[in-house]
Length: 121
Length: 121
Image (cartoon, rainbow over all chains, first blue to last red; front, side):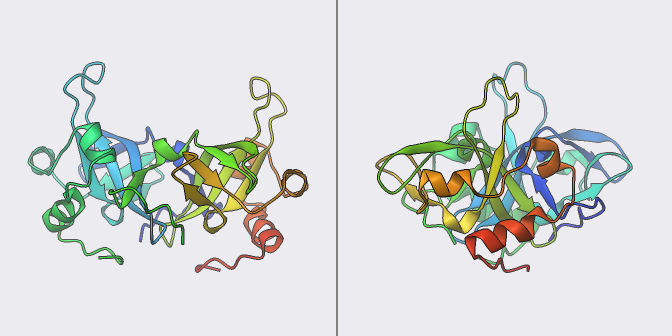
């Protein structure tokens, strides 16, 4: 559940979410939504994949957050997460291949870290 | 529900879905998935937005299909929809602004056309 419902359109395109900034509750910019992971069987939006701006993608790490952790703030034009930068730095993170090609069970580790139980789990 | 579940990873990234080819059941190429529309409140993948390859996007039309209509075919490496090209040409279609900025009720018209009732409706 995500309360990104302030605009008139009940739908949002994935392309619009990709690239949207992510802030902490103090307004500090944490990074941006790089991609979205969809759960195939349930058809649900499962995770927002945050990036923190590596140099040309070299050594770039991606931090998946359960979609329900993000709240859209229309004033900031970005998502807010109730997490300090330090906590995010210690959160489970992966490279792109691990996230997209590999079934290494990262979803369960991410759910544990954020203490979220998705509907399909 | 989508049976794109043949690979080991129960998740797929939106970036991977964007650009994936769409075929009819005879194997004819219909177009490609241009984008994905997410339903904000339920957090569900609502529609795949098909494009048919306009020239530099000029006059390009986008045809949203309920996500449940698409089936992933690992042999073809693309999605299959049980629709003839002629039927898709007559399906509801919109330009990008209509799809992404405007709450003009296109979702209801698309659901009607494909006779699909999404869980949030």
